[in-house]
Image: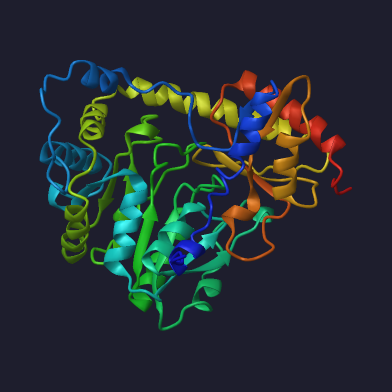
Length: 399
């Protein structure tokens, strides 16, 4: 029998999706599973986007330009310009979700064996993108004790080797909900310039910044024209996860032209998705105001109620719609499986993402879970009650 590739063996299963079989079995038993494991909002997609599909006049769904429809890229550039990001349509590559944007950037900027430093916990799929590109992730650990703030720059410096080619941040952060401050971003800017690195910034949660905190894009930082690489997506901003449309944005011309070659190899990004993405840019401002208020209320409720449970620690996220929560358990992987396979409370249980999957350092996240507050407060209240009772009954509870 021929062997599977080493790359395939190394590719990790999604820590967010690996518990799906246990959730499906729970549903087959008649248990209602409350999904707090994945960032799939229940917020409605904007009507302007749905109308663009309903009223599509085209008789043929054609290939687009490999960089994406020019009309969409021009309109997207105007959106970025409106928030102080000075780019034009030639500096944007439309991708199949933000995931492809990251993959193209890694393939274009990094050689096999190169290293990127990423604050952990980090979005678990970064591991998969790195392995596919032959890149090594070097983690620098943030902690729940200070709400997962950026680790000291000296910790980054200590990890830099001749193989180090970039820094990766997600801002606001998935999975922690942390929003990097202007001061933190400027510190990273100095580090990037000092060591001549790429600065990769995943900004798909840009609109979700709370408590009057402002988002600072990597593209706002002066002097990084050849270093800054931004990733974006319509998935969260417009609640359009399924259309799989993202963007790779950089003023580095060599990067864009190189990434376009990878884009040509996959022909073009999704045609219907681009139609939806372009139409979404006409979404009324009231939509975002309403969504913002809804997430603020969900966050405040979730944080307050979770912190009432004995042994639970939940920092207050400043952005996105996730939080990393410390639980009084021996092993978050075991607990997240147990609560699906061996427990229910009044016919209900909760699906969460084990914290270990968001760390690269072995042993980290053993008593943490990621919770996505993407459901209405009534469902969140049910989930918190189920979690409270589950923790009281879990055999591996830590006092």
